[in-house]
Image 1 (cartoon, rainbow, N blue to C red):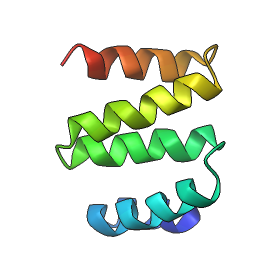
Image 2: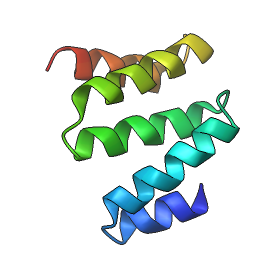
Image 3: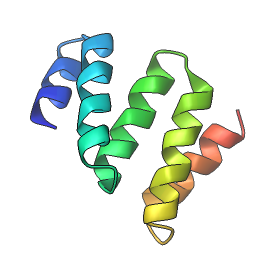
Image 4: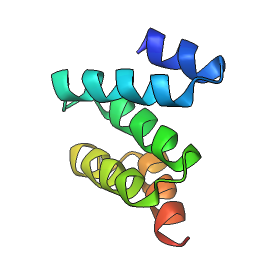
Length: 77
């Protein structure tokens, strides 16, 4: 995830997305990875995959308020 965050902070959103997709493929149970994946998709204008990632994060952590709020926000767009 460090490389994802570094690329994101450096403005390389596509690179961050590619690395994040690899991370999520290796660790599909990592809520933080799914949240970051959703954020990157949204920043790139990909709302449907952002929502899909958040739904997966919600399935893993339905009691996490950050996931719930972000999913609700994206669904209302």
